[in-house]
Each structure stands twice: as C-alpha cells, then as structure tokens.
Image 1 (cartoon, one colour):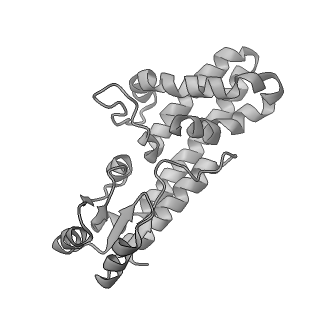
Image 2 (cartoon, rainbow, N blue to C red):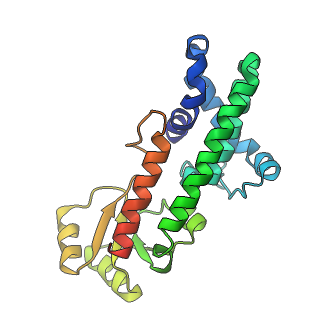
Length: 221
C-alpha cells in the first residue's frame, strides 16, 4: 500500500538508530502514524504552514496519491514522528531532529522540482489515468484527461496542441504505434510508488525520477 511505502521511504532514516528496540513495531506504527495523518493533516498544516490540499475523498478514504505533493509528505512525516516519539519517549528529540532534516530535504526537493517543471507548466499533456491531481496542483501543470480509442486520444491531443501522453500502465502495442504515427511522445510514470526503493532516500529518488521523465516528455528535451 502507498501508506506503508511512504512510511518506509521517509521514516526509516530516523528509525534506524533505534531499530534493535523498535523492530517489532516499525511497520505497524508507521502505518498507524500515516493513518493518523488523515485526521491530523489540517492541524499539522495550520501549525506548520505547509498549505495542505484535501487528502480525504468524499467517501472518507485517504487519497493515496497525496504524496505527489511534497508538502503533504511533510505533514505525513510529522504525524509519524509524533507516533514514534510517543512510543520511544527517551529519544523524543533525536526523532525530532532527524525528522526536521528530512523536512528540510523535502523543501529542497520541492524547489528543485518546481524549477525543473517550470517550462512544462506552460505545456498541456494528456493523461490516460486520473492520478496526477496533486502533482498538477502543486506545480501548476495542465492535464488533458483522455480515454476511449487510440484515435480518440490522438484527436484530443491534437485539439489541445499536446505533444505528450502520460500513462500509469504500459501502453498496448496498438496504442503505442498510433501515438508514434501521430508524432506524440509517451511516458509511463509510477505515481503509486510501485517501483520506489524501500531505502533511505527512496522517496526522493522516485519523485525526482518521475518529475524528470515527465519534463522530458512534455518539453521534448
């Protein structure tokens, strides 16, 4: 699940010093913390000024693509930090210090991606699956939802002057050949983090790679 992967990607760097005593609780409490994020998000955002966007769907479920906005990842990290501080009070300030370092790294990531996608923000691109709303909102991107037949997608792209088609699943050979004949570039991205490494820096590497691949497709660089 996305929540578990984000727990590993962001929390392991500051869990690591105390893993021998916390090992039985790592995954359970990381998940508990990220679930708590759903109810803590507004309080955290007000207190820290992260400018949170809505992360809970109308039916009450967490939209697990919220981490496509690094500011949401910051709020999630704060929630998880509080869980571990409660579990291991002796190391309260160690957790806080390490968490603060990750927050700083997330701000730096956000700045880099904002600069990277500056040109892309002026160029619309087709999305075949509606999973990029947080990325779109954070970096002022313009997406053109499209579906139906391969020809329908090409016509929608041509009508909007689009040169890039973004998918979250591998394109079938027929669609790929139609897009190629129409001189449309395509890229398959991983907004769900299926390929994210569960190591220190995994989130940052995954997010940076996705932003770079999107930028290359949209700007044709």
